[in-house]
Image (cartoon, rainbow, N blue to C red; front, top):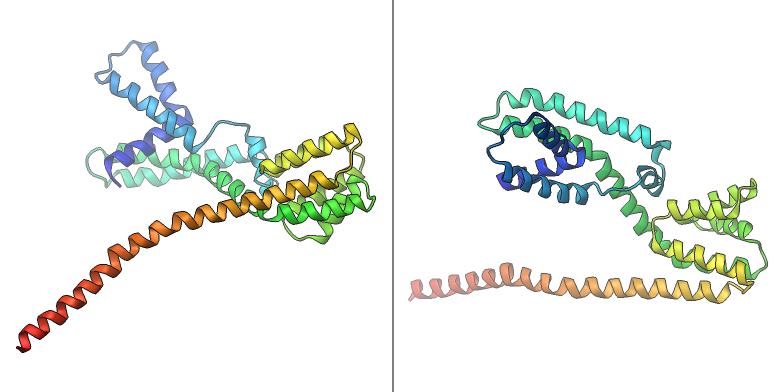
Length: 278
């Protein structure tokens, strides 16, 4: 690991845990003179930016819901895991610091606990992104199923339940859970709000707005749902075309760096062999 990368990791961890701000307050309160005050301020600013990028601010409970509430964890459980991971990392860093040269022991004692504290945030973020990708792939099909169910005369709760039963996937399972809550008598607005939080895709918020607008004005839902499904499919096609367009230069770069030199080597070897035989 290069010194610059190590410094960035340390700054991100310190900013995310609030250690930089705490250190600044302690120095200001005690009135100590700091030789490199400007460097510390620059480190704090850099750490703040990196910390927000790695562990963005937001409601931890909402992030847990968007991740699917893994293993029925709540915010208290996740904070306990974060603290425990930091303590375990500190226990690992302590003996490691005894054998590291120079200033590396201090780096290990700061960086490893910070990374341990940020590890659950990174895990939640990756889980949310994975769920969002899976739900985006399922969304057009479940929208079509919902449109058919509603056009058949089923109420919303029954229609969501039918979609959840007939389609296997993350989004359909969330809709099935929402239908069960509606059956138990929970308010419709509360159930839809829960679905928005647990389904981390923008199209879900758009769907809830469409349902609310249709209920308020009494308009049929067939055409809006069909239009939204078409928009989702068109957006997916655009992403595929963009990915294919970005892949072409990468393939050309591989050809330029690997195939062309190998062909030139073969040509040079053939020329060398012909010159030797002559």
